Length: 155
Image (cartoon, rainbow, N blue to C red; front, side, top):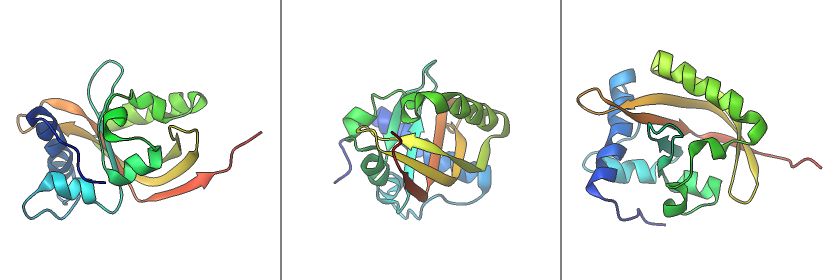
């Protein structure tokens, strides 16, 4: 799966993922010599991000994240991020996002997510951080994780 066609506005927001991570941690999220967007897309771990809307909508998911969530880029980038968690876990997710808002970044998140077809998977040791543009304006939050395991369905 190749990187989708992106508008200039999308590119600007996606660049904030790597730039914000570096500003917060002093480390690079991905090795990118020339093309940070391509490096984020090809990263060997999942990366997702959502905007600052009242009901935040995903604006990026890399190829691994799209595979996990079983969606294409266009579908994923229309999804309110709260729907990536099961209804009973959405309060936990809201608490996480508030913690990130307060601290800028956390690097120990674990939780259950759900794909478009209802497959559940637990992520562990995820980094979740606030996104800002070069001027410091908030543009959303992002998460990256390389640890996930399927969760058996109940019932």
